[in-house]
Length: 224
Image 1 (tube, rainbow, N blue to C red):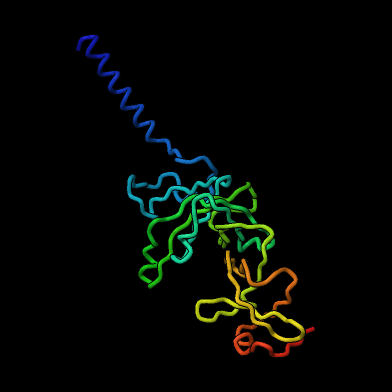
Image 2 (image 1 turned 120 degrees about the vertical axis):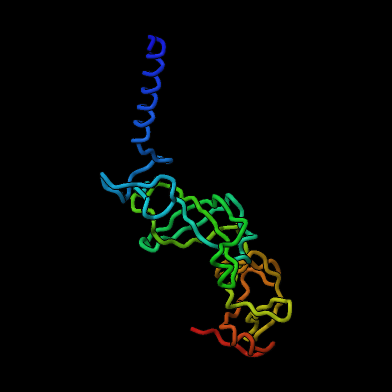
């Protein structure tokens, strides 16, 4: 072989060696810490097969924890990327965490379709860096789709419905007076009242079956 051919051969061997060396390193696609190692030195790992038997390790970034959940089809239309959320973690019931909706799925999950419902995936980015939080914890959240200040609100137990109209009973001179109302934002426990009553009105609360039996002009007593 000539000197030139020998140099090319050595260069090829060097590149092969460098490629083999590169394959010896395992690089995580994200920054974070190793939470679990599933393989030991000397074990065979089949490259390219995404199956549990070939998971080498689990890496997570605690600074960017994502809550993955499902929302009913009736509520998904109200949720937008960027909405704020209040998150409660089952293991930390005394604490409340803040989050922001990172993405809203455009298709329902396959499991929800097979069960007869339609649930859409939602991903929420948890804000802050609490060392007590760890991947795999169970949590629930309330997504805030709208917010108003200085409004009148009533619990659902105070509101009745007659055909397509909502109403309440107020105590006036010791008797029940029926008032039809217009509602606004509906929360988990309370409803915004736009018109029909004013601040200071004494509203009679249910249970619902009691409101349904209550009549206009019927005498009522305040429960102590």
